[in-house]
Length: 417
Image (cartoon, rainbow, N blue to C red):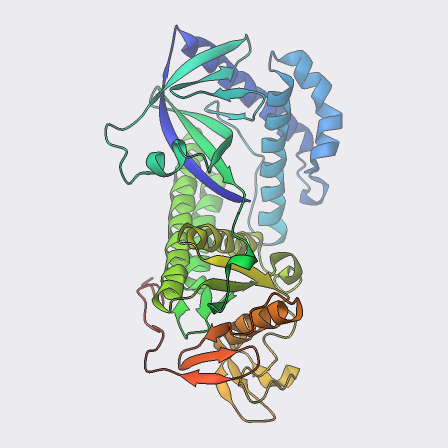
């Protein structure tokens, strides 16, 4: 499932702001009540299970507030995620933590609590529904509104309502089912891509080294240190600042991953690739299980960004099994697999002596493995090939050199700290 978020300003009708403000406050109270129940000064005893929190708090919250059932559940989920983040900070990041405190400026909506119309939406409150008109920019050309809002291919699935400076903003989540079929790729060229949680974020079979995971992780560490210091301050001003720097980091992080994903797709287009091969996310979780939740999130997000950006250009994205892609020699005349072939970022085949950057070798194998999958499945793609820095290679190992080469330089390769 592909996801995209778009913010739109709202104009609330007929004094609906009074009901919305009251709903903001009760939603805050509900989330805070659940967080209070789940919190413990002993981090090991913090309860972050949604089902356990629901069983313990649902009836009380329904009795204490006028929220509809779905808003009660949404507030519980918000509190559970905040409690889970606290445990992650303490046990995985060794950070000081304090009980989550919620501000009355957010309400989470799902398909049962919001109805989207062409020029307005209706929002559930503590007393019926209110109507809010969308306030679009005068010119929506080349904006998310043009791409997603009126598109039949993207569906509005949920939303989060915010209030800033007495103005209401709706963050709408759009979803789309990928429609590209492997049968559309015949006799085409595949770009293999190896994603990582450290070192380079993405390395392609054409020799492009894109993004810097260490830089991304460094920025995250800086944010966490600031957040921890502010939490220890404990003032309302500090909590407001935490929210502000958190939003800035999240926006920066997503933008950085978007740019890396775009660079991957540009590399595919530069080499006239019809498909991009990536590792299966579910099967690779064991490899990245020791990474922080932030690193795992970034890994997954980058794959999702590449998928929908590629499909916007008619490029198929297909996944393969990740096993042994880092241990197998990608030289077309070899293929020897052994765990000692790789030593950190260096790959040297114990059999043929081929030396490559380890991630580049893995990217070549990922592309080759997709061709093997297609050949074994009888998909009729015997003439497909993997794009390399020095040419192309078919699934049968036939290499064709070319005078063109993949780009190894990118402004994303070594971003300045």
